[in-house]
Amino acid sequence: MRKADARAEYTYGIRQKYQRAKKKDKSELLDEYVMVTGYHRKHAMAILSGQFKPKKGRIRRWRGRTYTDEDKRTLLQLAGWFDEIGSKRLRASLDQELDRLRASGHVQTSEESFERLKRMSPATMDRLRAGQGCLKRKARGGTKPGSLLKKQIPVRTFAGWSDKKVGFIEMDLVQHDGGNPSGFFGCTLHMTDVCSGWCEPIAVENKAQKRVFDALKKVRLRLPFPLLGVDSDNGAEFINAEMLAYCQQEKLTFTRGRVGHKNDNPFIEQKNWSVVRCLVGYGRFDTSLQIALLNKLYDKYRLFSNFFLPVTKLVDKQRIGSQVKKTYDKPKTPFLRLLESPDVSQINKQRLANTYANLDVVTLKNEIDALIDKLKPSPLR
Image 1 (cartoon, rainbow, N blue to C red):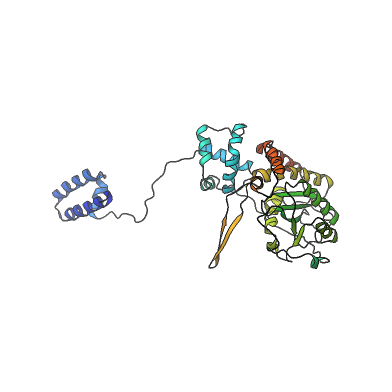
Image 2: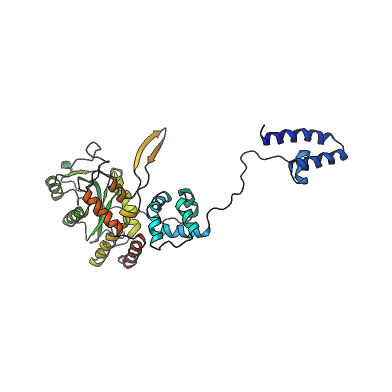
């Protein structure tokens, strides 16, 4: 018999005697009950008289504090260095970078606190980071349709694309018009690899077809993998004869999404927010100096996001009634995903590893913050 069951049986028996006994006998029974159970005399009296009614359900007892204020301060500092990403992704980043940050002297905390940070779960991080939210902004779009060659460019279907193979990218143009689409203003040509999550932003002075096309060729030269296919929306900057001829000449798969279906390009649409909008906002950038600063900023941020910010990939999706259950893999940086990919050559993998060895996440983040401080939007007219 369990100890709790024995105590309950004993309490039931003595309670029956207590409620029928005289005053003198009650005192003796109470003394015996207190001695056996160790309860306070007033509490024991309430139990035996029937006044105490135990609460049903799980008893919640106070648990000693595991993580200290020092742990929280260091965690918030680390979260700031990693762009305030979610705790599951932050945990993956710390698994990769925490020892390097300690060795370089950026993390200066006690040995005990450092060990606690190494084993801290994402759920605990969420509790310690409560209230450290990210400002949400309203999105706007300004895609002008390019219908002249639309019939010659097939709508993307998953039969012609391989999401498991590196080299197929989605691309989009993000406007920096500040809410006023008149006149000339800068744009960001943003590209992301569907398989690895590797992203490449580059600023252009306007959305002219020639400038966008030149930026695409420039980005292709710095990709750490061969380009196999591109997928875009229906904007005229992409749907044009020059782009179509280039893709046919280079034997690149060129596809487009359906008109009015932004979910046909989900990977780049999500990156437009997390990379471009969270980085530079919705201000207007329409001068050559601003475009040059944007490209300096992107040169730093592409290294920061690709080498230090983990991404998750959808591995399974099941519909259960009216709900959809999605399963994601373990968060990994695009850099690590490329190292694991058989589609990337050993030469490119070695170049990536050499680049990573010369990077410092805190120094890179400070340089990014300094460039953001210099980048001032144009006043609205």
